[in-house]
Length: 466
Ligand code: CO
Image (cartoon, rainbow, N blue to C red; front, top):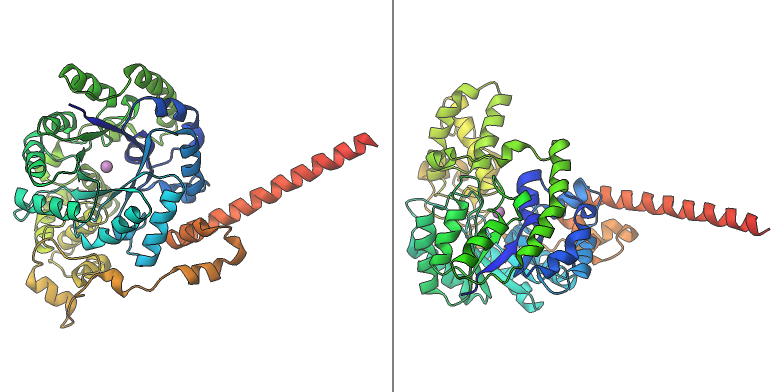
């Protein structure tokens, strides 16, 4: 039986271990080897890479995609897209979503993994449709979580909805690494019984369950798993590619991956990792195993955020109370999956409730927007009292929030004038206005410097001729 391996070193491993600070020059030279390794796909774009390119690395994210495509000619390229949020943190208009997805495919993307933090399928529909229209592979996604309202039947129903939408594959996304081997086995069985499209499993090694979870998922019939080359694996990243390939091949599965090339790829990334460990961009803390997340049932990343937040307020002694309050807030909000941005929102609200000594005395701006329906429909019923306090007699949004948004494109184009050299520039600006403008300034300055240097060289050579 074939098990597809997706390599995440360029996107999720990079994002989870070192806050997406890996510049293109640090992986450029290994791309052609990665193309030969036999991966089913290479996850290399989307998620936080787009923001990071503009904000920290002075790179044009679109150029990064084109460069990767020029060197990875055979292997499918894959990206992560937050549905109607695209790669940002709020909903965009359908027009922007369509343009962004179409341009991603035109610039070389093959597979777009599309998710919504609330599993509200209305929020992935436009992106899925645009992907299919542009000839791409749309991978519909279920965000994994546990709660009294999340059941195998409910997940199977989501799987059917994704298949009916026309998605060519389905991903179970366990962003927190809390899916146990047994839960994975049961869930993949339920999904394989419900849909006929391939099912891919995505987890993180955070709690130490990852590799075991993958093995049971494969036993249950999973068609693919996401792994990271060993030097960039473990901790908050994915389980190691080499170890999974070794294990699965021995058990008689065909991964199609060449282990000799994996060694070559890892040899390339070891010094890269060491460089970022030395500069502290990669903090060894993230490589540890955080089994506490299994006790508290909250993601490891959210736990460390809470600790940092309480420390900053000199209230770290209240951590236990906040950890008790967190499940209560999540329940009051209808059990949203604790993925960005919900994990941060729930954590901050729980801390506020504890520190002010009264539940919902102060309610966060985003929590209010969530209750108004601006993020989609809550998975379960929202606490009535809380809803009344926020809505204050106003009804929540009936339809899909994006239906109320006007197209952003023409305004952005008019604003940028000739600073935008192509449609991609305008989309970068819509996605991250301040960061894109700062990048355009940098690009302009660099171009002027280069032209000046060129002119200097030319004038010297003319003198020489004379
Ligand atoms: Co992930």
